[in-house]
Length: 88
Figure: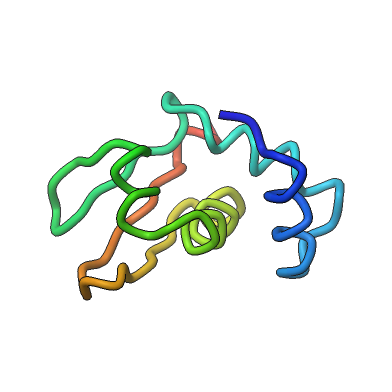
């Protein structure tokens, strides 16, 4: 998955610098970030579906720099991001 122009603009509006975007994009690779919901693994597509694009981007951008992150979906369930493989 690549960041679209609109995604980059949103991330910059959150306070990220242009130089942060490559690391966030690296975290988007399936081999570098895993997702879970209530302790069960889910796909990136499912995380996007549950959270919506902006909440997903907020979560992945935090995880890309802090190993992990969490975002709560509208249904009240929490999606966990784990990007530890990005730092190996």
